[in-house]
Every structure is written in structure tokens, then in C-alpha cells.
Image 1: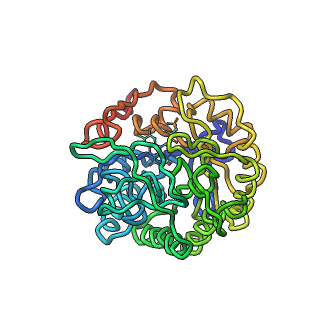
Image 2: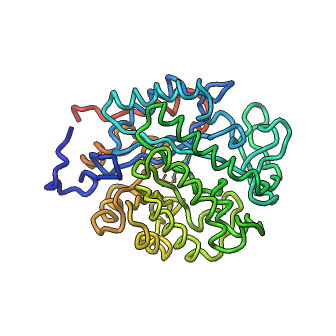
Image 3: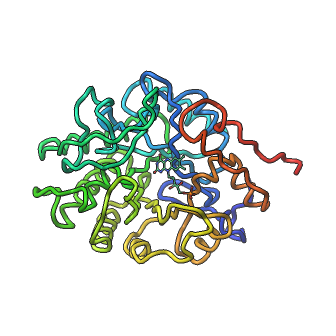
Length: 373
Ligand SMILES: Cc1cc2nc3c(=O)[nH]c(=O)nc-3n(C[C@H](O)[C@H](O)[C@H](O)COP(=O)(O)O)c2cc1C
């Protein structure tokens, strides 16, 4: 292993204590859906294990979003964490990453209304309220992309059972040998749908006021922390970035201020904040007001994501505004991203046409640097 002592001058290669995990560097792999799980059954494969093992030099790998239940599924070929076969498949992944000296956390996912009746035997997907996302999702096969189906509102009585789906996913992730879990609270999926007033019109104790809208997210965090211990759990949030899934949020500062105060009380190890979607060249140089508020109110680590490259990540860490940075499309295309950053080497360009679905092409065939270079 490289020198990661306190005398390390490159901020990207300073070691980081992330709750119970000791990370040798701060170049983290963002969760990336690749839609290559075996069918039927949404089971991780040996090819998936090879892909993750290639990226084991990340300070920490976050897996692709992984549905905690059949109800939580909204895209074709995404993996699950609710069956014995899936646990066995994931075990091969975690063993391969550990054999290469890496660490890996599973992203726990429930899509809520970002789904289609075809995934649910003709029944409507579930959401806080019966409001269509107005988005498109990937059905696979000959259909390809299709409009989302209008969801039905979860009944008050059903909600504890949905919270429990995350807890069971967390339990199975433990059995599969992960080092921790990340709760997907971002990108217009179920938790975000509860947080946002545009998608949550409930008038019971899960909607209306800020306190009620954050309740579902907090209960999921408590349930997952009860399984793993909070020091191995974090949550991904994307405040104000829900437009892809038709989620609109007013009261951004009160909502996220209250939420992260509660997540701090629960003791989560980190927050993974998607600050921006888009080209690195257009990324705002400074964090937004909501990001600064989250940093201030949350006691654990702040991990930043969205449009970062090596130097912008170094600045974010060096200034103290972030503890680590997640890289998405750059890590997808560069299995040895930390080493490339260390050497200032050129980067492979991501090939968008192979992002979702398919085989090894555009998945495990991105070249690593030759060690002789
Ligand atoms: C192909 C692809 C798949 C993605 N899948 C997920 C996912 O499963 N879960 C998630 O939270 N974000 C997902 N994202 C978002 C990324 O984690 C990240 O937030 C985004 O790419 C911005 O970071 P970047 O600019 O470093 O790429 C995905 C992004 C891409 C490009």
C-alpha cells in the first residue's frame, strides 16, 4: 500500500476514518447503475465481481443502486438484495474486492414511483402520493424506455413494512460481506419523494410539515443503523436536484437542515451529497447554501460528488469543505483512477452507449495504466 501517513501532501491520498472504516485515500467510487445483473432473479455475476475488483484501489467503492425488495424495483437488469441467490452473488463481489485490498459498501434502494406496472405484475408502483413522476424508465427487452406508471399512495399502515424492507436489505448486505451500506435518499427515488413537497402531499404524520416529510428518511436511517451500527451507515442526498424524476422541492434549507440534524443524532458516519449533475467545466466553484448548511449541521463526514476532477477534489478537501470526493463517470472509465490522479496521467473517456446493459464491452475492458508508464 502507498504511504498514507499524516505527512502525505496530496489531499486525495490522506487516509480518512469514515466511521468504523479506515480509508487509505479519499478518491471514492460513486454508485453507478450498470444494468448487468443475471436474469431472471436480478443476481450479481462473476462479471460484476471482476468489474468491482478492478476498481478496488478506491478509498471506498459504493455499489450501484440495489433494490431492497421486488416492490423497490424500477429498472431492468438492476441487482437486488432480497434473495439468497443475490446474497451469494454479492458475496463473490465482496470477496473479489477484499482480495484486491479494497472496501465496498452497498447502496440500498427503493425506487418508489420511478417504476412501471410491468415490474409489479400489472399493479401500480408505490409512493408517498399518487402523483406520476412524468419520467421515463428502462424496461429492457424490445420496449426499451417507457413512461413511468402513476403510483398509488402508500397507506399509513404499510409504511413500517417499507422501512423494514431497507432493514432486511441491510441485514442481507451484512451476510454478503459488505463493509457498510449507503441508504439512497437522493435522485428522486422513494426517500427523496417523501422529503420533497412536490411529490409528498400526505396529510398524515409522513407529510405536510418539514418534521413530517423527513420522518420516513429518519426512520429508515434508524432501522438500518440498528442492523449495522451507525458507524457503518451513511445516506446519499441530492438537495434540490430531483428534476430528473419530477421531484420539486421548496423549503430546501429548513428541510435539509432538519433532516441532517436528525441523521447526526442517529450517528450516521457520513453523508454523500450529490451537489451537481453535468460537465466538470460548468461545475460551480463554490458549494451552494444548502451544502454549506449540511456541512455545518452534520457531525459525521461530508462526501461531495458531481463534476469533480482531481484538482477540484483536492481543493474541496484541502479547504475543509469536504472530507472525500466520489467520482462517477470518471471511475466508470478508469479502473485505476487513484493511480492516474497521483501521476497526473491521462484519463480514458467514458462510453455512454455501454453505460446501461450489455456485457464486458464498456464494462471490464477499460484499460488500466501500464505500470511501466
Ligand atoms: C451510468 C451512471 C449510473 C448511475 N447510477 C447511479 C446509482 O445507481 N445510484 C446513484 O445514487 N447515483 C447514480 N448515478 C449518479 C452518480 O453516482 C453521480 O452522482 C453522477 O455521475 C455525478 O458524478 P460525476 O460527475 O463524478 O460522474 C449514476 C450515474 C451514471 C453516469
